[in-house]
View 1 (tube, rainbow, N blue to C red):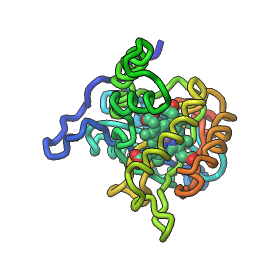
View 2 (cartoon, rainbow, N blue to C red):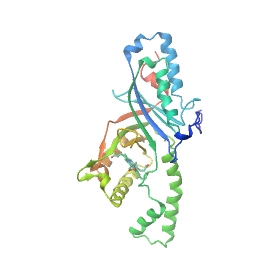
View 3 (cartoon, helix red, strand yellow):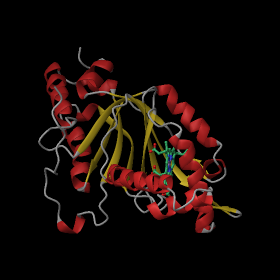
Length: 284
Ligand code: 76R
């Protein structure tokens, strides 16, 4: 029986670090095992180190951030990953420090990390904008259908906004994470486009995203001002094939085709720390 995730931060947040916008801090952390260093550890340290790593990656441990998900990472970029979210940025950074401070630490190599925050995108439509779009598409603003559609949207928005700011992990087994920027080139500068044009492109983008409802769930976290890239894209999928399907489909959206630049992709599978150790042959 899985234990419920914690609902409040284990550590109290220094008031000066508490989020003011209602969002959470988020880190994606990637590590590999150093086989040479592992071979030099005593059997005792390996066993104790495995227990330390399991404790460091326990999503319901006493010191865990509010959300912690661990993954087996495919390919050579990393062996495992952890995604952590919490209102307290130091609580998240402790996850990284706890991984390294354990007795397997000398045999663990940090490979990559991405520091970001959750937020509600400026392109999320208000119920008023949603209604205006329906009218623009020919719906009568006085009709019962119009009223029902706008009401349904505004009801859904409450939960969607909660999920954007304080997300729960979706129940999907596969995920990929990659950073992205919007282009700032002469004649192709996202940030000099008028707001209406950016809105139009993001509505097109959201439409092609919604086509994957029930197959892919996305979380956009913001790296602007915090990281080398502007956004982190985390996609969870009910099947790994949907990851390629959605990213391919979005390559044709003008917002991506014309304005997006992407960094490295990290693809993985949700797994507990015990499963990671077994998968990486560390349980022997
Ligand atoms: O949040 C919402 O669901 C509202 C509509 C929406 C916004 C505002 C939305 C929907 N996205 C939004 C914002 Mn998105 N998204 C990406 C990528 O690979 C690529 O080509 C691009 C990477 C994917 C795959 C994806 C998927 N989206 C953004 C932003 C921030 C812009 C800003 O704030 O300036 C970026 C960088 C971005 C990129 N998007 C959706 C999806 C999917 C699947 C949806 C449908 C809604 C859902 O299922 O959650």
